[in-house]
Image 1: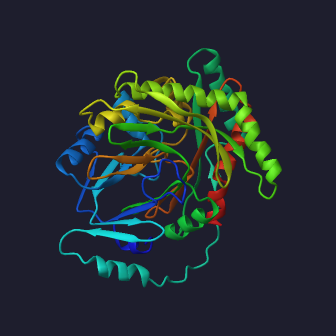
Image 2: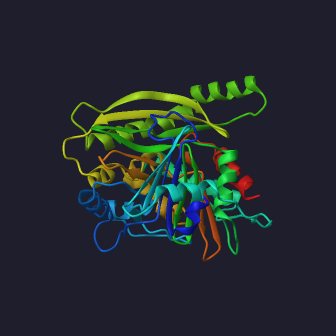
Image 3: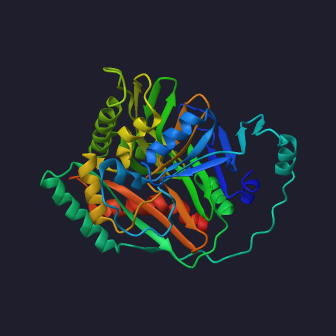
Length: 408
């Protein structure tokens, strides 16, 4: 199916890799565009709202982190070498829904799903030429990163914020990769529940995200912020379980998650009925291939007739990728980070014909501009007063380790 998507300028493949996190679809994909829209001269989220209200159809696409400039009236800062549009949504020509026992193919009148199915199953992949692994550089030296963390901690001491998600970019220029091949390798190394392969013209997202942003089912909406990370220990069950236990009881990691839970509760309260927002699962530790992660689930009942643009305006960007208080830390992120986040820290997902939706958090991802031959991998960690700067730097390296292996 991934290789079938090569011939389309727009293609989106979403895979939960068998996880059961409030499961929607095991695997869903969209190819081609009957109608496609990007943010232009009207507010970005209104673009999505208009597309949704005019079309009771499947809609796929993304919202980039920098839509926050519109929501909070910020001035854009920092360079962007990938250049995904701030917002892009499309109604697909072809939709695939796949589970363990069947593949369903949906098409517009005049197309033949049987031929599409035959083309997919008969695909014979060409041999991929061997290439040297790209040499990744960082926008920060280790010392510069640590010094910046200390500066951010001074902002916390002064009361500017409580927690801030600080990210750095690892990058390579003049690099050619096969995006589908890298995605398949990454999925083997790090299969995660909100993985995405996403193509927009000559730009690609290769994503192994373990985190959900928002899911709507009927009037119920949930968010599942992820804060708190511990490395898995392969081959030693007892030591690995100790890592999980240590994460669960770690006061610094718990406080990170609690602060973001409070932020998400406040965000959802803007769009939910009074008294309906509650924490359903609190500080639960889940195992993933590379790391243990602490996740909380916040749920609420949406007010009647709440537009999809209102939902995202109230909740975006996700608190797990900003910190608290949200507006002030986004100002600090713009000041201290050296790269525009773009699609990183944004979200990719779908809206179904009845208006339900599911969107991830774009982390543990590689972004690729094929025309400019540029690779970008961003990673961050939550900085608090109790953070140890070297540990935060090491956490960034841990989060990009699987992507480095996939590139190799």
